[in-house]
Image (cartoon, rainbow, N blue to C red; front, top):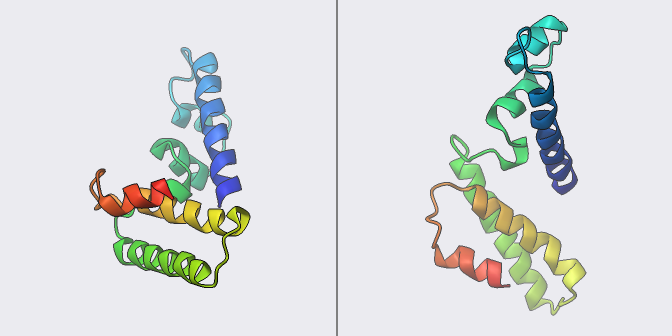
Length: 121
């Protein structure tokens, strides 16, 4: 997911720049572009309209899944620390994923103490 997220985000930025260059009398939106060139790409259109990769999609409708992921990642990190695994290359990926998952959860306030602690780690 991290490579997908980075690649998709980069493509969205490139797309916005390219769309501005081709916008004119015939093409005023992405829908016009797709119609003109007969493109059938519903998933790409969804990403473009939401202006974010699916991995950054908000947690609406997925609250329980988001909570389960956060708990699972937290337990994983705690287990690694209890086993005295301290190498950054072994802990950092799980911490990064935990932070990304917590950021995706819109129900948490921005100043949530747990989010601040994970960010400090």
